[in-house]
Image (cartoon, rainbow, N blue to C red; front, side):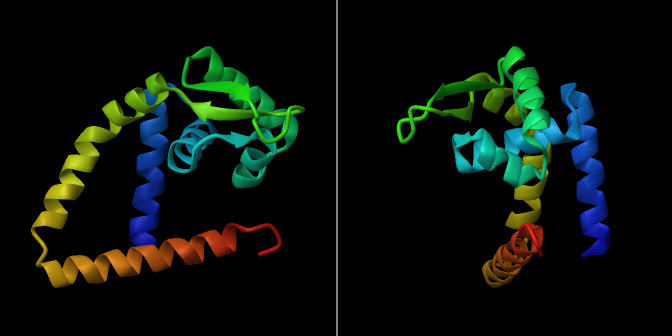
Length: 136
């Protein structure tokens, strides 16, 4: 697990650099693409950043056309930040070779092993999320 975690972090830093982003900007894009639009406060919580830092980060991503602010239908006083089609396409373009290799690796595994690996990764992700929560 440690070797995989280290390799994943190295990959993320490399991916961010290839995209001309900071790792925190790439992390924000990942959260927005995986979970959909969210408030600035939710993004602050996800990335453990201050409101001022999140505002600056979103401003940078917005200037690149990777995210947009839209009115929050649940609260007229706030807005939601969401990934744009351009942001998704640019991320996917850089991730495609990695995704293809992982899919090929997955396809070489027998179905039972794929199911076991999927369960393990799902449970490992839940543990990581629990330990990422404030006060964990």
